[in-house]
Length: 603
Image 1 (cartoon, rainbow, N blue to C red):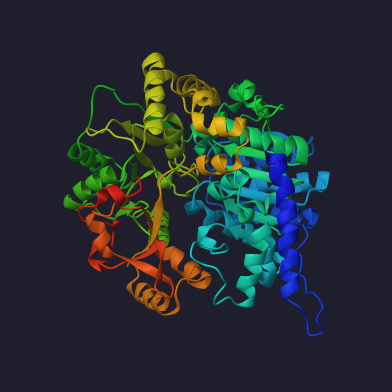
Image 2 (spheres, rainbow, N blue to C red):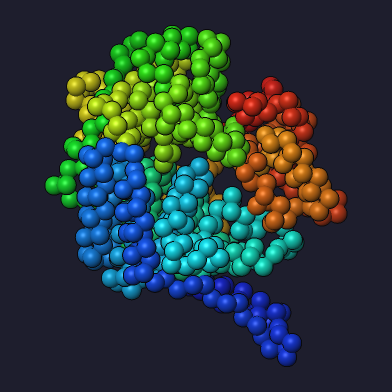
């Protein structure tokens, strides 16, 4: 099916470009074709990146041990890049510089094997900003500020580079926006940064617009960061598609994380869909000993038969010696409950972080949190899991609600991250009201619980990569990904492209985009603009930072009375874009809290 999609992609892209040129003629009536995107000069780009890494390393506020670890990781990546093409894993501790070292691998690899582009795939929009900022700062010296948007292409919802439902023309586009949109249509750029949803759902799509870019993956390096977020029920078809890209289309695929899933355990099941199966080579040799050298925090495991109320937990947080504490909860309602307890106690420097808050709000909170951490000021941050993957914060003490092992390890990556203290502490606790975002998350937490019972706290060393391997093998034995998602597996067997596209979904629930009143001036301006001009690409790009995603509410839900559909044209309105009409429902610390409609909040 991937082979058919790749052929379909090339044909569709050629047809679109030819049609575009037919209608966009010059004064003499000749077809005018779009300009191709920049060509990757891997050698020069790598040189610029290495110079940037050296500059960052010299000014980094990290211990000599952490700096040495980061330098060794970079060298391991550069050495591994000269080996053959195929499937790779990059397993390294949080805070070890994986983002830039992985890009160095990709550029050296592209230079060595004549590859055309690098595609970086990230699971969350919350970490795209940070990654793209690093890429841009590294590469600007060789391409110039005016060409950065062509060289580094962001293709995700916050970039506003793709058509939205209800949009049939590109109203209000300036030349730069049009150029960005053109490059995003077929990924004609040397560096592409996109989301897991955009990338993986396109690999299983049946729509021309989604498939159009797939042929660009041939002769590319594809970097997956925080790969532990791949849903178990989609693991086997996903691995099979990526394996086929490597086997047939000269693509190299790298899976990077601190908690590497044991995907080789699924090799025989993957072979049923792709003969090559899944056998990846590790980039960093065990002899480098990254995890052994970087023990920055100790995990204090709980007594599983003892739970803590929010009041007790607030007291524990307030009683620790340091005034800087991060606490991560599994559910938004839990984070709200603890935040309110701490607020009632008068905690100094109290902050909250969740996807109830729009991206602009979360960005502002993280800037203030980092500033207080650097200045040594009191800082208590209560967060959901959105802080765990790729968010660069460094707390001396972290509290983590009991969770899957990979989540606990990721939480530990926010503790003593730069090793500026002898050690940090991660306190794992069982909340009195235990709960998880979904059944898969709960099942993974149960596997962690079984490991803790069987091994005891003394044998639960998160700095031993073997613990994560054991955890994932047990999880796969219990979750049986080869037996999950029977409808998708059956659609794959009969090669039903339409059904496969509808059944392969990283985010299963129907979500809507809601413009929220965080920045009241921007909110009023954006609301007036879209009411007057209707939904268009330029407005979407400006509105994204001020938007919260909600599950689509039922018609009888009270929140529907607070939502105004965004006009598209004439009397038509969009079914996935709304304006929130009650500014009082957006809390300046907690984000959007629609009364009597908490079920629409995405956990």
